[in-house]
Amino acid sequence: MSSAVTKGFRRSSSRTGARRSATKSSAKSRALKAKPTRLKAKRAIATKSSVRKASKSTTARNKVSKKPVAKRKAASLKTRAVKKPAPRKAVSRKGTVTRQKPVVVPRVKKTQKLAAVRAQRPITVSPAPPRPPTLDESAALRAFERAHKEFTHGRFVEARNQFRGLVEKYSQISEVAARARTYLTIAESRLRTENMLPRDADSLYDRGVIELNRGEYVAAQEMFERALKREPEAAHIHYGLAATRARLGSIDLALKSLQRALDLQPNLRVRAQHDQDLTSLRNDPDFDRLVFQPRV
Image (tube, rainbow, N blue to C red):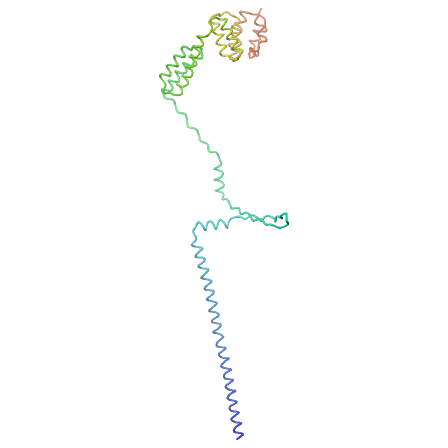
C-alpha cells in the first residue's frame, strides 16, 4: 500500500510540476506574443502623430500661400530691411544699463532716388514768341511816334492835336491810347503854364535861373530858350542855356551855347573857369580852347 501511495503521490507531483511548467511556458509564449502587438501599437501611434504634424505643416503652408500679393511684398520688404548695428550700451545716472532699440532703415531703390533728384530740378519753360502787331496797332504806334516827336521839340499845340486825334481814332488799342492820354494831359498843362509865364526876356531868364538852382534842368532849359526867342543877342541868356545843357549831358549843344556867349561877352571866360555847372565840359579840348586860351 505504501508503495502504491508513494507511486500515486509521485505521479500527482510530477503531473502538477508538468502542469506548472506548462503554465509557465504558456505565459512566456503569451508574453512573447504580446510584445510585438505593443510595438505595433506604439509604431501606429508614432505614425499617427507624424501624419498629424505633416497635415498641420501643409495647412500652414496653404494659409501662407493664400495671403494676398501685397502682403507678400510687404513681408519681403520687411525681410529686406537693413538693420543698423546695435548702439553701445548707455549708462544712466543711477548706474542702470539701458539698451536702445536698433533703428530699421528701409532700402531705397535707385529708381526712387533718380525720381527724387528729378523732382528737385527746376523746370524751365521757354517763353512763347511775341505776337506780331496788327495793322491798327502798327498804325497807332506810328501816329504816337509823330506826336511824341512834336512833344519833345516843345511844339505842344501840335502835339496836343495829334494826341487827341490818336485817342479818338485808336481807342481800341488800349496800351497806345493810355500813353497818348498821359502825354495829352502833360501837353495841355504845359500850354496852360505858357499862358501864365512872363512875357519879357529878363523875367524868363530869372525864372530859368530859379529852375536851374532847384535842379529842374528841363524847365530851366525851356525858360532860357523862351527868353532867347525874345532877345537872341543876350550873352547872359546864352551862358545860362550852356550851363543847363551841360547839366543835362548835352556836351556839344552846351559848347555851342558857351561859344556864342563868349563871342558876345568875352569877360564871361573868367566866370566859366570856376563855374560848377560846367564841370562836365572840362575834359573836352574845345572847352580848354574857349576858356583858357585867349584869342589874338
